[in-house]
Amino acid sequence: MTGPRIAVLDWVTGSRVNGPCSWKVLWVPGCSLGCPGCFNPRTHYVHDTSATGASLLLKVMAAGSNSEGLTISGGERLEQPDAIARLSDAWRDSTGTRVIILTGLAWEEIE
Image 1 (cartoon, one colour):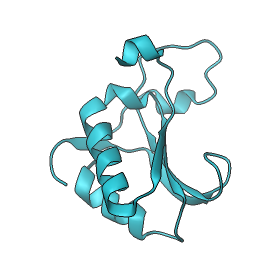
Image 2: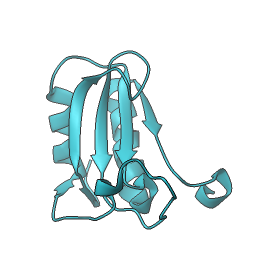
Image 3: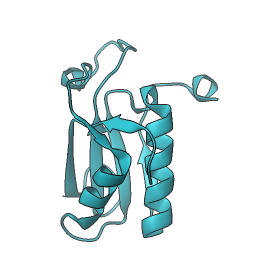
Image 4: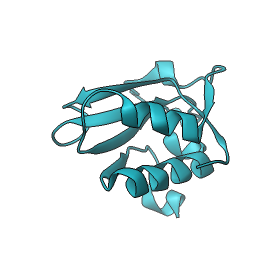
């Protein structure tokens, strides 16, 4: 996987609260939505934390135990649409497991 860089805030393995069973979770920064009551405002600002999608994918896949899938949270994930789409596709192709992308956007906005 090559292509766009992706801004990354943090990631963990073995989460049982961000997906069914044991999942790996990736948090990406940046959000311009300004939703009232947001529970994760520290993710709104992008810092210099970018990585190539390929290097990130390899680190997350290799870390910790096997997982049932990957959850991408944040910030607003879909403010990095190309990078998130490529990372999600590469994850599914490499692991055969699912990806959950949490977003504050309505389906009509995504389309």
